[in-house]
Amino acid sequence: MPQKSLTELPSVQDFLETMGGPEIINMIKICERKRKAFTDEEVSKKMNLKVTEIRALLNKLHFRGIAIYQKSRNQKTGWYNYTWEISKKRLATIVIEQQQDVLDKLGEKQALEGDYNFFDCNNCNERLPFEVAAEYNFICPSCGGVMDSNNNPQKQKEISKKIVKIESEMVFLNQINE
Image (cartoon, rainbow, N blue to C red):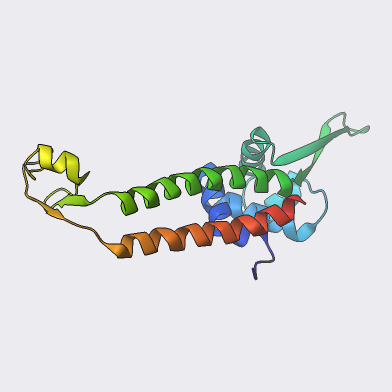
């Protein structure tokens, strides 16, 4: 896979965006480029965000075990200094777990598509297997619309493409964990 950065993977971007929006992705990209421990003030300057906003993002990552900090006391001021690191392994592990769940669901969906004849409602997009649609006399139980047969081999191909894409991303993520 041509990706050099963990944050280039769509699955990682989706996960991070749900955690903290596009800012969290940018922050991790900056931290990846540093390749060493960093302070929240350093990242704040590079991102043009308030230090409190950076700390909020770091705390969200810390809650999931992705951001790790070291605390030291400044002898002059008595204040604590925090240096942060991003655990790529932990991020990869979490995304792998999520992607495995998605793969399992896609596998079930692919099996269903292959095993059953489905009928779709013309009005509300309700999708039922033949047996259930026949019980309702091919009338949609949700809206009363007519249900038509929809055995589309294209759907199985789309599911297969999604599975292949996720598996290739997981190969890359597993390499990070090694």
